[in-house]
Each structure stands twice: as structure tokens, then as C-alpha cells.
Length: 125
Ligand SMILES: [Zn+2]
Ligand SMILES: [Zn+2]
Image 1 (cartoon, rainbow, N blue to C red):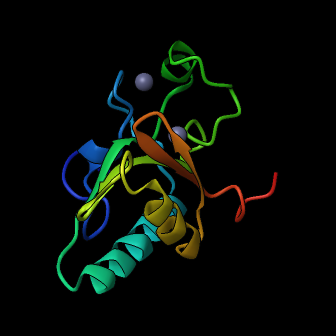
Image 2: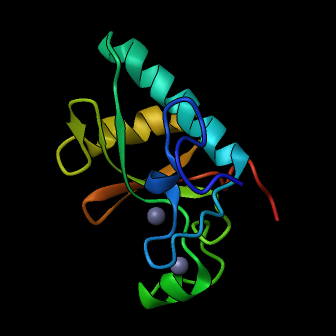
């Protein structure tokens, strides 16, 4: 596993790692779907469009500290919290972000200052 640099053409290890311990348990599936979502956003805005992420992978200790459940999709490396896509912010344009994320295969819902996106629809367990 790479500990620095890019994990995919447009996302870096640092963006997706756990904020407490720097471990990155993000799954390849999540990274693939993030690339799909980014490409859809770029097509929509007709330019290179960054997706700004506040949080992706969380180790179990960090996840508990945030008060989240142990079976959180963040712990499984299958969730990402998006704060901005292009000109859209999660606070002002959450409906657009949710719609885009859904079309990219995510289950998306509004959270505090972000849109939580996970792959619960793709992974049944
Ligand atoms: Zn951690
Ligand atoms: Zn989340």
C-alpha cells in the first residue's frame, strides 16, 4: 500500500487516510467510485473539478471518538464525507451533491457541514 502520493489519478493518500493515525484503509472500490463521481462533476461543470473531502477512512478508535457506530462504513473504508464539489458546498447545495453521488453509485445523505456518501448499496453484508 502506498503511504504517500496518489492512490488514484485524482485522489491522494493524505485526503483519504484516518485523521488520527494516518492509516489508510480506504477500499479500491471507494476510490473507483470517487473517480466516477469526479468525472461526472467535471462533465457537468465542463472543467476540472476537485472534490473536497473532510473525512474518508477511520480506524475504529477514531470512529468511536467521533461517537460513530462500530459498523460505520468509514471503518470499512467504504464511506467518504464530501464538503465541496466544484462550486457546490455541502451546506448550500447538498441536494445537488446527493443527486450526483447517487448517480455515481453512492448512498448519500446530508450530515453536519458535509454530505456523507457510502457504498452500502453495492456491498451487502
Ligand atoms: Zn486512526
Ligand atoms: Zn460519513
